Image (cartoon, rainbow, N blue to C red; front, top):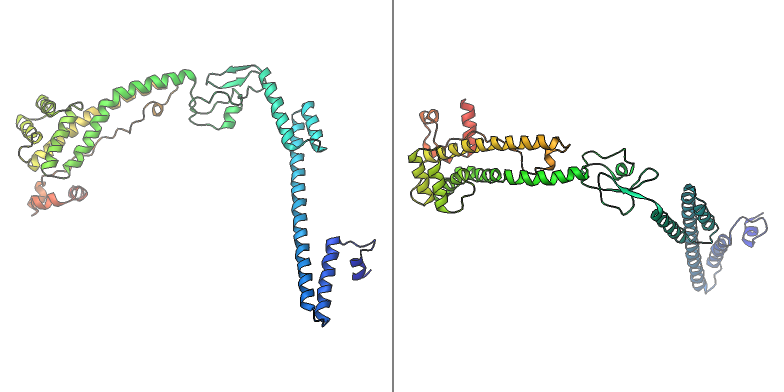
Length: 355
C-alpha cells in the first residue's frame, strides 16, 4: 500500500483522519508552489490557515484526552480508597463512581456525610492531656475535638497513634495547672533580681563612659542595685545611706553625684562599680538558689524548669576593668589620661598580657 492509499483512507490505513488531512494539505501546498498559478500566494495562504486550524484542533483534542484520563485516574484512586474502608456502603459508592453514575465530588461528599453520622454514634472520652478521643478502635482523636494541651514536641502522627504513644515533653491537664502556678510564683519571686540585673547592665555601661551625666547615672545605678524598688531621689539617697558596703566618704560622694554636685574621681567610680559587682554577685547567687528550689519542685511533677521560668541564664559578671591606671603601667610611663582613653577590651588585653 502506498502513501496515496493512506491518504485516501483505505481499510488497512493506520493513519487518523487528522494525520491524513495534514499530509494532504502538505502535498497540496507543495503542488501549489510548483504550479506556476498566478493565484499561488492566495492558495498557499488558504492552505496555511487550514494547517493552523488543524494544529489547534489537535491541541484541543489532546487536552481533552488528558483531562479525561486524569479524571479517570482520580475516580480510580477514590474508588480504591472507598473500598479500603471495608464497608459495603462505601463499596457501593465506589461502584457508582466507576460507572460514572455519580461524580467524584458527589462520592466524597456522601462519604463525609456517612462518616459524620457514624461519629455521632461513637462514644468519646477526654484523656489526661485534654484531647477528645473515641472509646473504640485505636482511641484516635476526634476530628475538631479539643486542641492538644501544651505540645512541646511531637508530631500529629504521634498524637494520633493511640494512648500508648504520648509525645515527649507534653503535659497533662494536672501538670499544666501546676505549670501555671509555678510560673506565676517564680515570676513574682524573681522580679526583684531581674530589676537588679537590668540596673547592673546599665551601670556597667555607664562605667565605661566618664562624665557628669555618667557620674549621676552611675550613682543612681548603685542605689538601684541596693534597692531596685526606689523611685525618687530621696529614696535613692536613703538606700545609699543604709548601705553597709561603702565607707561614709564613699556614701557622701555617691549622694553628691545623685544630687548633681561635683565630679567623681576615677578611683571613686571604680570603687562604686566594684561594690555594685559584689552586691550583684550575692543577689545572683541567691536567685540561683531560688531557681534550684523551683527546678526541684517542678521536676517532682515531671516538669522542666524552662517551661516555668523564661528569664535569661544567670551569669556571674567578669572582674571590673580598673578605671585607675594600674601601678605597673604607670611605672612604665603611661599616664592616667592615656589609660582612660583606651577602650575596655584594650585595657583588659594589656592586663591579661601583664599577668
